[in-house]
Length: 174
Image (cartoon, rainbow, N blue to C red; front, top):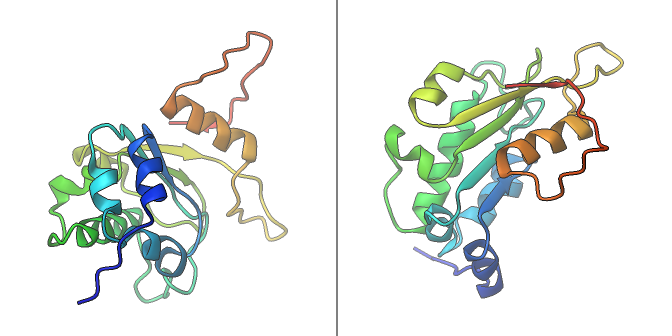
């Protein structure tokens, strides 16, 4: 088995952060390859990293959406957690351990989006925040509203620059 170590600067950045954001992208070709590197899972599992936020893709793709068995939000959380545990040389985490690697899920509510079981995630100690995005030409959506996403992240992480002259949009539903 080959265990490639992460760049020390990456580990230093994670170790110096209170928040990690798993961004939108192809799960198995963009996100997972970065998480399986030796040291990354250990750094993310640190209690110093308080917020481990998954921004769930607005739509399923060819990696996660075969019509016969589409990924749910929990499947995304499991895949991320499995990669982080693997980078530590550990077996796949139990459901109770998923919160070591994902503490929050931000998701779109739409017909093309992965299904999210809010009650199940809550039972596992993972908070979920639903957003509504603009509709596309087909009326189905699948894209985040940038301001609503920024507000959701600020709410989870905590706002650093509190300006009384800024108003909040009412697009966040939690």
